[in-house]
Each structure stands twice: as C-alpha cells, then as structure tokens.
Length: 213
Image (cartoon, rainbow, N blue to C red; front, side, top):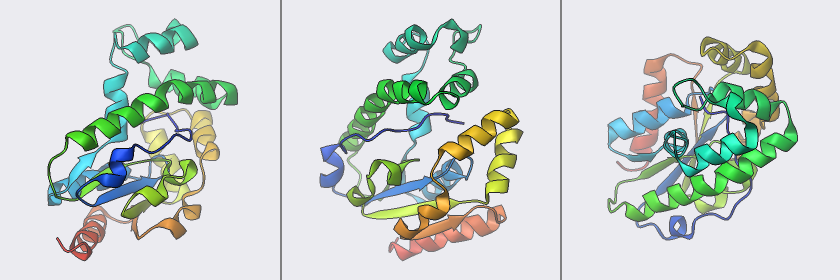
C-alpha cells in the first residue's frame, strides 16, 4: 500500500521523446493498479511501478529516509529501521499541511527515478507506467494512452481494511482522492477490477490486442 500522493511537477522531458508507446495506468487507492500492471508485464510489456520506486527510495539509510525522520520524527520508523508507512499515512492524511510537506519531499525524487528508468530503457515494447494521480497532476497529455483501473468504493474500503488499515484512516484516504469516476472520461481503456480475476485478465488481454500486440 502506498499512502503517498503526488503534487504538480513538470513531466520528465524524456517521456515525451520515448521511442516506444508509453501507457499510463492510473486509478484510486486499492483499485488494483499493481495487479493490472503485472498482467501487462506477463503479456510482454515493460513496466514501471511507482510503489516499487517509493519502496526503494525509502530504504533505511537513504537521503529521503533521513529527511522524513527529521520532518516527521522517530515515530514513523519501525524497530527494524524500516519506514512505518501506515503511521506516516495517518499523520499525512490527518493534516493537509503535513501531506503537502510529504509531497514536496517525495515527489521530485519519484519523478527523477521515473525519468531515469525511461531513459535507461532500450526496448521498443510498450512501456506501462503506474501513475496513481495522473489526472490530478495534469500528466495525461504526456502519454500515448491511458488505462484507468476502477473498482467500487465499497471494494476499495474492503481491500484497505483487509490490508490492516484502520477504518478511520481508510475513510481519510478515500476522501482525500479524486473519485475514479471522474478519471474515466480521460481513459482510452477502463479495467474494472470489482469483477473476477479471470474477467480482469480478459479485459487486459483485449487492451493488449487492441494495441496490436
């Protein structure tokens, strides 16, 4: 689970000059973006996961890890030194100022990491990039295609609770995000993940085929 949001930031210039199709995968929290991303990877696409980037950036001892401790205190660190992302989420989603400060620290590093990964890629297969708040930050015009992953709000909440997110925090997370139904008009394709896993796989397969793969 990633409790982190993104603030507006210039799109990496290399994304606009990539030699292959760049497809954004977006949607709300707990809607199955990572699952869909992995399905495209299985079909032969190259993928970039924003959540995996965040995990790497916040390993114990990294610059960002130290910055967050200075900003939010030792309470956000577990006994093993790893970041307590749930505790950090509770702080950030409970205070708009802290959430903005978290974004200011994290977002530029994520953008730089994505830019580097795109630059280092020399494959011509489609590149699928997970961008949770694509519409909110105004990145939609910089991708060849957009896939919106959508589940029902009730299922989002159920999934968050199943991950151990406290009910109050789950409500705060869902309320803080743009409803996914508002993102659907920007989509080239919509993958609805409140359906069975085989049905989700079929939806992804149809998109892959529509891309001429």
